[in-house]
Length: 149
Image (tube, rainbow, N blue to C red; front, side):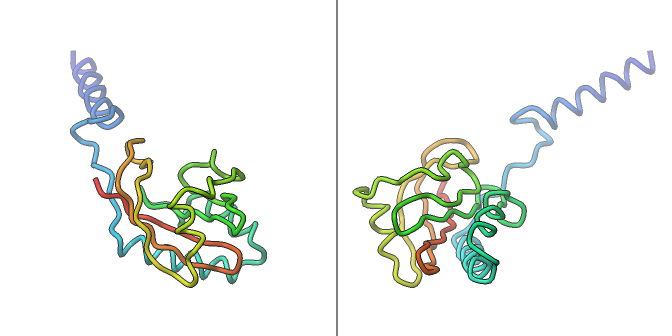
């Protein structure tokens, strides 16, 4: 009877932790605009210092220091090709719609700045308002955005 009780308690605990919405599962942290700006500046610096952009893109795509909750690095080049995306790897290597206002805005960034648009969040796969801080590094625009839920 005692081992059955332990088993049931362990099962209840694991269910609460493992299942979505479990009462012991902490809510994912949503990033602030300040955190997005700081990560974008750090990523742009990393891209400038890394030995070749492909190594930097691989690091951004791998997550690690470049992914925290719904915060992730993305990079688009001057031709509109997605070179990195820490949340949506299926975008890497694809060409953006150059006529889309958000893409025009991204590619128009001269040094750095903010752009607001709607985009799917990795936290819930739903579309939300998003503010991304962008930094131009040569032929690339590095961005990190904060979603508004």
